[in-house]
Image (cartoon, rainbow, N blue to C red; front, side):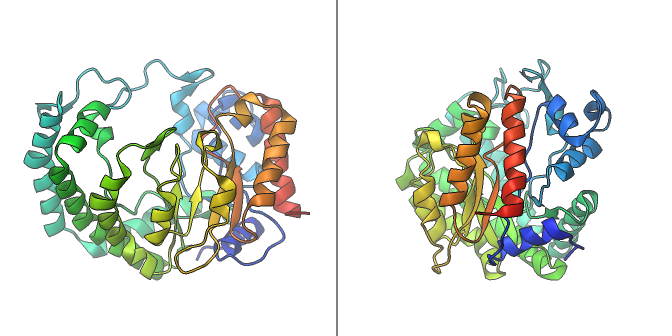
Length: 377
């Protein structure tokens, strides 16, 4: 375990669900450069010239206690009004032609052909060549590097090195992939099974890294599987062909005592009980406007009957960009009053893109400081 000062110790105690006076502050990915610099106490233009150090300075001045997803250079893709015009397009952001391994992916049949010709053999070869010891070393080195950058006041927790089967819309595009998902369910399950065969090896290495490196026992899983209407694919199909492979993937980490959280985008209410049945310990990031029932979720328990860990966030889609400072303060109080008595973190629901009023950001950072110091008083 790294050297820890008070804020980091508060975060670790909250992970362990010990009673505490204060509510720890989560890392908040603020994307507007002027706000990053203002919060860091640095002059205009300093973020672009030294993004990592200025971003970390912002985090420290905000009193951040815990960081999982460390993305200090992510705001470089943003200008004052959103993404820069030269932002690289992908299969899900308007790429005109999707090409993979020399194949043009322009139909569900082509997506399936690419899976069978390229992805399936690639995963089978990766299973045969997997080096657990090397992967353990890689994970530990990566976590130590970021922890050293953050310093002793901010606790680095897990993100990005635990794997599980994913929906490949990011690779083949929404239309090609979801048509293939509907038309060829047996190929989709084959894909999930092969992904799981590989990822369980990775996750056994990750579980070893947690034990051998005495890493803080928390990890955030992140894969968008819903929009505002509900899950991106039929829930019954997930029950048949995805959840069994997901559950076996995360088994080594749960056995090692790692508490897994799920990042929530869209309306995931139907998935929440199923994720808990698989062994998850809590959730992060809620789009309340789409039907994510914060009160109902906070009242749920893990499969072994423990209260959940909740990383609660002020809404970055409604309250922070469109509300008033009083709305921000009111939502923070609501999150705290209705959150679990132990295991509650407080931050923003996701990245805060440019355009929110400074007065709202100031009310937000002041609120974080208040609850970090005074808790529910």
